[in-house]
Length: 422
Image 1 (tube, one colour):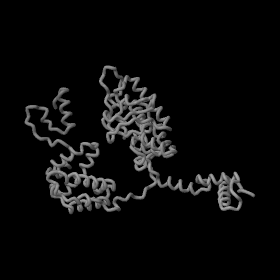
Image 2: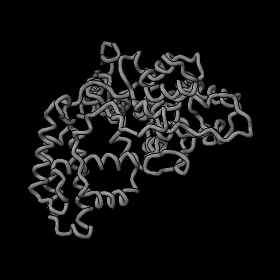
Image 3: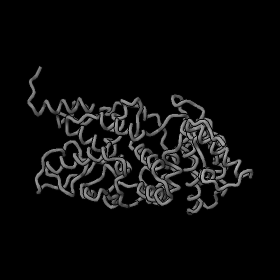
Image 4: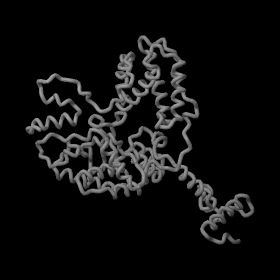
């Protein structure tokens, strides 16, 4: 045995932790490959490079998209390339596109453990490739490709059809959301940061990327607004707008405002991150550089998962936007109010909000229909006829009188009365 100095001991530990040859301790030894890495599974993966140049050109073209969107499209393009075993895209035929379409349809019915894909993934793969080939046909050297290639990638109708919706909500009600926040621990500063992030998601309705890249200067506590500035934040579709804090979120606001006050007590200023990294949650002096926001939204995702665990489910940060949309559907009475609510969610028009957010469950639909079948529900015209009946505005014996009388009797029965007597 040989006693090592502190420096040599650190070198040995570094080699062991990184799976590197111990020969690196002695710089005079010849460097011998140490089989760095613990997972050899990737060694059996076939890599194709024949189409790299045109794929790179497409990436330049796709630079206008969000990085996540580009990555999703690249996965679809590379998967099609593997299906062709690396053949050049110049030689793709409609038959190849049809074969890949059938391949996707088969993967749809397989389980995830056996390599199957979800219905959503299959639809996206097909649409990504259709868009790619529409672009490819306009590039030099590829203009001879068949114009029908995107058509051959169209999936059967039963693949595009959505399954029967289950009564499983993908978002909490406002009461459940507050229950989540109220149960979150707050003993440590990190726990209070996570609690404030979840609370503010239900206050402002920002997406996860934008919310986790906020700085203190983006807030206006007095005006109860927050600015999404795409020049400084991670925002979908490059959209800047000012969001007013949503109504009925007063309890959430208190949690969030307390967090802002805690940051200010630590010396955080306007340019500093609203939700910093753990290492930056320390007292600061005015001369220090500004604290950068979270690099990703992982901390927010983890916070939502932990907060919703007591409810027996796992909500995502995006579920807060669905909750707010459902709240708006309940309290907005006019078209103008619904339009304003939609714009406050960052949507260009109300149809986007209605199409994608807070969709009505089958159970809720059934409840509403049952209520409409109740004797207590009357249309505006029926209500006016009942009023006219009690005001004696109908001539006895006429059809209008008989209809109004029946409506009035129905109303009396619903209210527990004995009906109308002559």
